[in-house]
Length: 205
Image 1 (cartoon, one colour):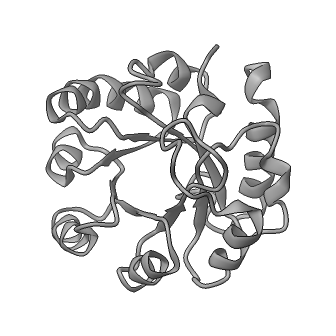
Image 2 (image 1 turned 120 degrees about the horizontal axis):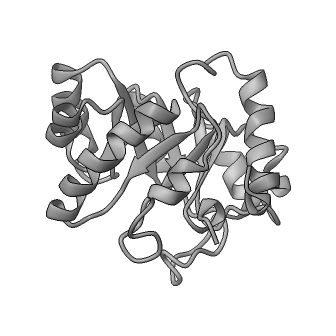
């Protein structure tokens, strides 16, 4: 395992050991990013077995090309693979699930549930979104941004206390995203958190 992801991976592993859903829902997630992680193959190849990958490239053509490339890699590595935004692509490549943004999540969730029985996750940035994701019966809510993040440098962060409060507002598993790294993951130890998601925090450097 890469020394750079030690604390983060270890924290996720401890959550995995305690989780009743450990066979279906990873506690460590890598998110792709067209700017910060345009080619995630190397990072994926070094994730611990049982981790998850969310293909989050926003450009449709790039997302499609990358989906066909990383899906076999995830399968070979024993990783859960979700496709963001595009349930049709997720179904076409045989992904393990789909990840939806806040906007349009209800329609996307309905269409995905009609097509597949795979995982369904949703992004959330507020209490209102938490309620929506809970009503939709998502398998997990990815709540962000917890800390300052390069992806959204001007976004207002939740901070550990607000994050912890929001996790208690739902019965669904909550994944922490946004500036998550080895140096701050311990600050979420008292939150009702199922796992951690990162870009740079899990990138190979």
